[in-house]
Amino acid sequence: MIFKKSLAVFNRILLTDSSVSKLHRSLAKDYPGGKNQEGEYSSLKINFIKDLKHNLPVDVKITAGTKNDFKFLPKLKKIIRAKDLILNDLGYYSLDFFKYILKKKAFFISKLKLNSTKTIFVNNPDAKYFKNGNVKSETRYVQLDLETICSSMNIGEIKEVENVYVGSAFEKVPCRLIITRLDGVLEERRLKTVTKKIRDPRPYLREEKRDIAKYGFIITNLQKKDYPKEDIYPIYSLRWQIELDFKNWKSILEIDESTRKLKKERIEVHFYGKLCNILMNNELSNILREEIEDKSLIFSEKKIFQKIKYYLDRIHHYDYKVFRIIDKLKILVPKTCIKSRRKGEFSSDDILKLII
Picture 1: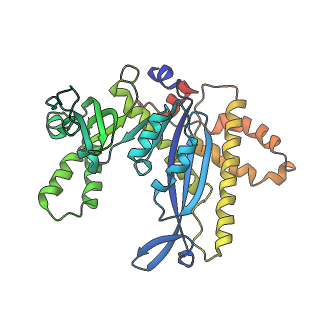
Picture 2: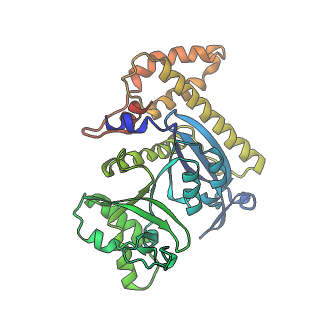
Picture 3: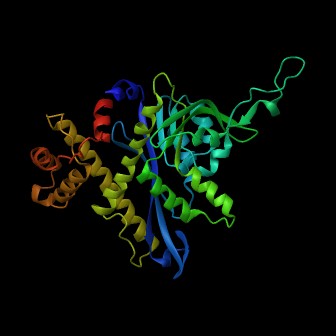
């Protein structure tokens, strides 16, 4: 119940992520995707913004697969309002974006990239001053000694460093830093990922990156008195819901099945048609949740999507009247779309029931 009070203050919980679909290489000029052993190929990227608190799509945009997520930030900036909570993937963040969130009086929780650990500063206790009492800017901050902090941590331990600054020597953003010593399973998974990405031939640097990969780093501007360090990661884990949305789109609505050789216009019609289908499914899902009387039930989004898709494909059997399908689903969904629960786990649906 700790989340009921703490998350209720947010107007929206905005999740942003992208999904890439591979296209036929004949479209590489309009939708470039890079090169592989077979030569140049084509890909298309769907950038999606979702308000998790109200289960509503906020914005969707189709771009070339090679377009960096960072380029989507101007669109996201136009959407952010005061008291929004932003839970984005690492690719969507920049120092200017953090500053913009603070300016709009919104909130963020973000993982910190492993190669950004040297951009964390704290106030220098030995700062030098001018005769008039003003601190010399070049001595105001000092780099945080993460190695010393992390070396004494046990598996599963969580530490917090308050009043840190993330950025460069010239520009910084104030925040809190939450450090977690990963357990065995997560550590092994992270080490495998990092090992694949390390291309530096110098052995000492490779080991340094492998050592730092044993820890998770999260930064946030949420207040400590309202959000203790133990609550930060469970809240950030809500971001995984947008990944599940993409998974449903691909497995149920077949959003990425477009490897046939088609014209650019045909491919765009295909994808925008699929996105219209997704929005219809999402709207019907929200209507069903409101119409079903037993509010204590937790439903599987995937199962609901499957049911809605099945009946929308057969809408001609219901004289093309959507309300008749809704009446049918109001009976079936409580019986067939209950979400399976893992023993001892606090699911995102449990959290959301306390928010909405």
